[in-house]
Length: 297
Ligand SMILES: NC(=O)c1ccc[n+]([C@@H]2O[C@H](COP(=O)([O-])OP(=O)(O)OC[C@H]3O[C@@H](n4cnc5c(N)ncnc54)[C@H](OP(=O)(O)O)[C@@H]3O)[C@@H](O)[C@H]2O)c1
Image (cartoon, rainbow, N blue to C red; front, side):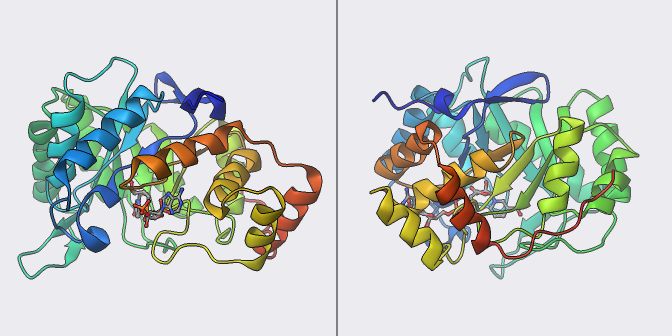
């Protein structure tokens, strides 16, 4: 079977139709993605190029991934960028000299972060910039309205094509949307962490993508007996089943698994070609516990 991201289906992200399985670049950096350079520079470049060769047209990065380390890699591997490629970035936090991430939501910090991304990616305009709010993995009630005003100004200046928000609640999304058009929400969501069920469904009704970050659980990876049972029954891996479940859950979910290996990248893309039957879906649905009530937007 040919491996291609196209098998995962397509959904509109901003003004482009994007293959639903994307690629998160965070694990290309050194251990723990904690501001360190990649252990193997050549492999990191090869993974990025392989992803695009296999049809990945949504690559996510941010300054969290070691200041500029991944943006520099993306530029080296992929510049000049294919027209169909959407590189999404995140601003709103920065890496300190003491080695920790802190909020960076002031107008000055947001201006600098956008300019840094432009410089390091070698782009005149950023495709999609997420305003990353504190509150990972579970969003907290903190309005993104004020920092969103700064990003809306930068968009009006032509530095940003589209705006997204990350780590927001339903109310946070509504607050951001009152300032500027929001084309996507990026929150943590996977088969075992379903606190955002209502937001996924509310965004689906509006035709807005829900970008599932850390779709394999992040730190630590998902561990659930139900997932292991389904993977064993289908003679595949838990990672693949977790990604196929996300694709089956709602058409607006765009998972962005990260990996530093070509083998895992290819396995993850194979998830787009798999179909889960009602028995497997029933078992997987039970992992996440009680589905939350509906949300109105
Ligand atoms: N907005 C936010 O606040 C936020 C926060 C966290 C992450 N993110 C985004 O989400 C993306 C993904 O997040 P993440 O890296 O934390 O989580 P993830 O994609 O859920 O998990 C990555 C981990 O899974 C492993 N893995 C990947 N494919 C695998 C496979 N087929 N089989 C076995 N293991 C596999 C990776 O190891 P190997 O390298 O060995 O494959 C890595 O340890 C990031 O790149 C970033 O773009 C956003």
